[in-house]
Image 1: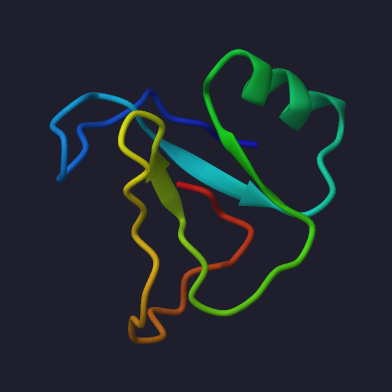
Image 2: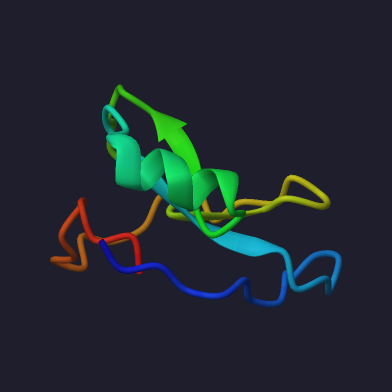
Length: 76
């Protein structure tokens, strides 16, 4: 699994935007979430769920978007 350092939030400006991973978390993903490198989004995977979110102001990138062909399992 690839993770990234937090990025800048478009709403609040803090560098607290993290990728969101969906599905049943295994030990590695759980450890990454405990270290603050990824958010766990839950086990149910639906279209147009956010791919990243801010841990400061709760902003996320959810909403309608064109099918960009991106793999739903790729959290980058």
